Every structure is written in structure tokens, then in C-alpha cells.
Length: 428
Image 1 (tube, rainbow, N blue to C red):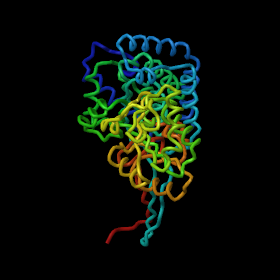
Image 2: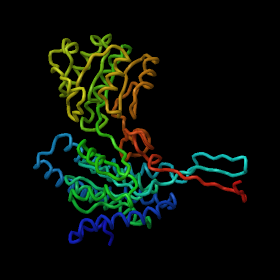
Image 3: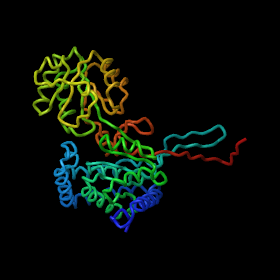
Image 4: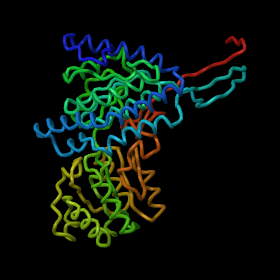
């Protein structure tokens, strides 16, 4: 039985981690040349296993939730932890969606001939072994496992202690899919302990792991960034803005902002600050505040915006730099696109920012001027999601500038190599 399927608590943690890395590297070598049909079968069989074991998965999750509540977990983290029947079904659907996507491995990215007759082709290849460290959201295990498998990468999953039972049940379904497809069960492994030292070991395993993807709070991501010897796909915060331009439709602004803030307040794509043009303030803000307050949101505003609604709470300078992950939003008055861009540059986190306007010129100035991974016109910031981008799922959102930016899906989990074909050429 593989290390991924047993706790082996009598074995030193360092040895457990070395075995995980060795087995992942061996599995990655097989996955790199695995036919698409086999990968797809593993995913569809895993989806079937999740549906068949939905009751057991819900029971495991209920135990995790009960323990988390007893420990006083925050509302935002609790929302991420809970697996409703709809979320369990969505995990299975997501696995099948990834199976239905084109295989990114082996695709020809560019090809050209040289004057000497050499034929040079750039071809997509897997990254290798990917370590995914996440906290309370257990469905990350399914999304990450699916994306890594389809893109020919081996995965090492490290869920948070609060979601250990849930992740273990999801992992078992993924392994069942691998087994049914005749693929190495070690292609998707789960660190079989809640010992926090396991993260430290994983971050130093640069001989076995090629990329680390942290999914969680700022503390986790700062630790990973500080300690990792391995390249990291990351984002620290989701301080996202929705900017209401002078040319905005008032009803659209109200509806989009309500969704962007309140659909799910604990996700990284939630809007945290509303910027509103002074020219649109009296026309648009009252309806926006009415909708937000009616939905149970606390609205914090600058003096000018508060003059329009006494229910707003005074905002402080700290609010412009806060990711609430809660039913709280801040409002600041700005003078035009340039002022909005300046605020976002000073206080944003390069994640997702949106503009609401019917003015096409203003929209293009905003889309071009904001230095964020995702920039949106006339839609909710909560579309910052790989599934909503048609990627089937995502392994995370990257706000860095190397290799991948925005939702990290199948194509972003590949690198490339060059195939050079000749007819006997020698270099002078």
C-alpha cells in the first residue's frame, strides 16, 4: 500500500515526506506520456466515486465542521469548509468538466524552419510535481487533483487540519479513479498527517517538487513565500475594487455590486472597496447602499458618501487596505478614471478589479490601466474563477508575473520544451 493511503504514524515525518516526494516523481514520469483517454477515465471514475460516496463525504465534513465550530473558527473559514449537497455535486461535475477539456500536454505552441533546414517546434509539457497547500476549503483537493492529473502532473495535497476528514474522503475518490484507469495511485497523494511540520518539509523538497501552490489566508501564504525553496504560484490578498464611473447605469451598478460583495463574502474574488465617481454619487450610491444594507452588509464610507446615507459607518485609512472576507464593504469617492486608477495602484492587491460604465472609452482606459491579474467591465468581481473562465476548475489565482497570472488552469500547469528536427546538419 502506498504512503498516500496510510497514516504510518510510526514512521518519522521526514521519511514520510521523502517517500511522498519519491513516489510523486516516479508517478509524474508516467503521467507525462499518459494518453488522454486514460486521464479522462480516471477523472470520470473519480466523479462517479464522489457521487457514490456523497453521504459518507457529507458525514466526514459534518465532523470537521463540528470540530471547527467548537474551536471558534471564523464565519468566512466556516463557509469555505462546509460541503453542502450542491457543493459535493459541483465537485463531481468539475471533475467531468476537466475531463471534457482539451489535453494541454503535447500541443504545438509554435513551429518554424531555419535557413539551415532545421525544423524547430515548441511543445507543451507538464511542470512535474505540484505541491498544493490549502486551508479550510476541501473542494480544492478535487479541483487541484483533477487539473494536475489532466495536465500530466503528479500532485501532493496538504489540506488544513480543520478539513482533514473531508479531504481524506475526497482523496479516496480520486485514488479510486486512478485505480480504475490503471494509473499510479501515487499520482495524487495526500500528506497523511495534520502535523504542521509537514509543510516545512514540503517547502524544502526542491529535488522532488517543482511548484508550490498555497491556497489560504495571508499568514499561510506569507509563510510559504518566506520558507519555500520552490517556485510559488500565489496571491496574498484579494483587495478587489468595483469602480462606478460617471457613465454607469444605476440599476446595473446596484445589482453587480450586490453580487460582487454578498454572493459569497469569504471568497478571494469578493469586492472589498467601492470607488464611486463624484459625478455619479447622488444618482447611484443611495440605491447601492440600500441594497447592501438590506442584505445585511455593513457599509463604511468617506465623509462625502456618508452625507447621503446616515446608516454608513465612518471609514478609516485602514479600510482601504483591508480584505474583509465578511459582510463589510468600504466606499470612497473619486474624481474620474485616473483617480480610481491611483487608488487601486496604492491599495489594491493585483487580484481583480472592475469598472461599471456605459462609456466605452472609460472602460478601455480602466482595463488597460489597472495592473491586476483580472480586470472586469460591467460584471461582478466574483467571476474571478477558473470554472467561470471555462477552465473547468482552477488550482488557484496567481497575482505574480512569472509564467501564470490569474486563474491557474490546465494550460498554466504546463511548461514547454523545444523539439529540433534535422537532416544531418552540423554547426560551422
